[in-house]
Image (cartoon, rainbow, N blue to C red; front, side, top):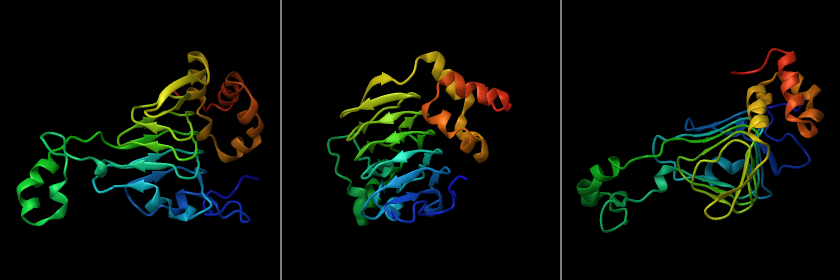
Amino acid sequence: MSPDPTAVHPLPAHERVVFLKPLISSEKIVVGEYTYYDDPDGATEFEHRNVLYGYGPERLVIGKYCAIASGTRFLMAGADHPTMGVSTYPFTMFGGEWAERTLDLVTGMPSRGDTVVGNDVWFGYQAVVMPGVRIGDGAIIATGAVVTADVPPYAIVGGNPARQIRQRFDDADIARLRRAAWWDWPEELVTANARTIMAGTPAEIERIAAQHGLEQN
């Protein structure tokens, strides 16, 4: 039997672990089923403590089955300061005549758009994701990494700024896994094949998807 994806605390004895989807109230944050956050101090406050500067229209989209360690933070586009001139000081935010004279500069600033995280992504302790970054399925973000650029599927990245350390699989196996898209399988099929998903090969995952007509183009 699989855990209840609507339960805030899937492990009742460990309140530090929360499923995020049932916690999110903001229309600008979308999280898939079974993605969890682990934090001994205020795990239920993820939306307010870990998604920062979300003043604009940009969204944070996180897929299914992601594992997010304590202190991981997503900086949204509201953190950006103007860089088109001499000063980066945000005069506009203080209102009054400062805002009247500068509002058009702020509203005209380019945006990198939504921050999008794929499925089955693992974030290490205190990782930081900058605005507009896209992180592919199956990626691993190392402890303390500062992700300033897009991350390919099944890549391992680390450092500040984060650089690719290696691919988890070769290109052919990554293609197999993306076609199989096990995170979109029915829950019963995921449960029945949890051991293979954890310890099997891309070819085995591909085979299961094909047997059930679940391969994606």
